Each structure stands twice: as C-alpha cells, then as structure tokens.
Length: 194
View 1: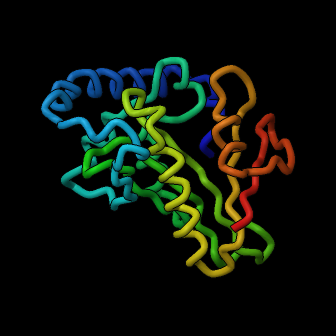
View 2 (view 1 turned 90 degrees about the horizontal axis):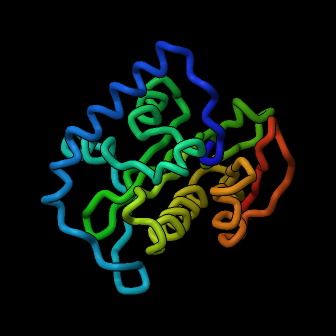
View 3 (view 1 turned 90 degrees about the vertical axis):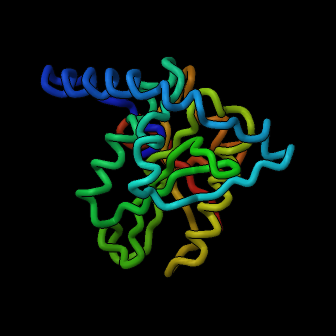
C-alpha cells in the first residue's frame, strides 16, 4: 500500500536494507549522466507507465524518496521483490520523457479472489523520486493508472491507503479525488470512483 508505515526491522532485515542502501549509493553515480526531464507536466513532460525491464530495472531501483518520506514507502527493490511473489501485482516504472522518475504497483484482482468475488484494484505502491517531486509526475501517473483500471474487468473504483501524519501523502490523494472510506490498521483507506 502506498501509504503503509514500514514496520520496525529485525536485525536480518536491517542488514539487508543497509546492503541495499550501500548499493544504491554506489550506483547513483550513473544517474549523473541521465538527462533531466522537463521541469513539470505543465511544461510538457510526457509521463508514461512503462514495463520494468532488464534495461531499466537498475535505474528504477536507484530511485529513492526524501529521507523524511522513507517511513511511508518501501524501496523499489523491495516492491519489485514483493511483486515477484504476488500473483496479483501489476507494476510499472514511471517515466518523464523517457527518464525514470518513479514507480507504482497495484494489487490487480479482477476476479475478486481477495474481495468476496467483487473486483478490486488497490494502489499498493506509488513513489516519485525526491529530485522529481512537485512536477506533476505523480498525479499524471495516477491518472494513467485510473485509465488502466477503467479498462480492467469491473474497474469502477481504485483504492489506496495512507498513514496520516507529517509527511503523509494524504493531501496528494485527496487532491486527486480519493475519498476516505475507513481506517484500517491505522491507515486511512481512500476510494476513487472511476
């Protein structure tokens, strides 16, 4: 879930996270050669949801949010690992003019296996890298995702959740038209009618 709080790590998980952080820092030098996309969607950036491939997976894994946001969204490498073991995961890189700027993943359940037979589409992860935030890429990506879900069987609504508090994406989701429906395990569940 995009707003889920990351639970405290056990020592083994903390060591794995430290290894991931080290790899990300070491490989971030490659990012310096990447051209910057246009300043914003309003200035003409072409935002797309693209398949994660062998060619772009490392760039996607290097994208990170601001340190103050790390408690709200898992690293992309963790999200990709979770997608590999979840049959309902549908995930895409977010690009602006071909430059990777973020990542999103939904739980795609058209047969309602997880929802008493009712189709359900849940925005599980959404991240825009720290250096690319505030340019409209996240909102454009959610609009593209809404178009995708509308084309799916029973795709009449999209759900998301967030943890309220400082740094929370709550204002972002409310601004896109998500309406709070309930609080579940400390997270606000929002619904966007499609």
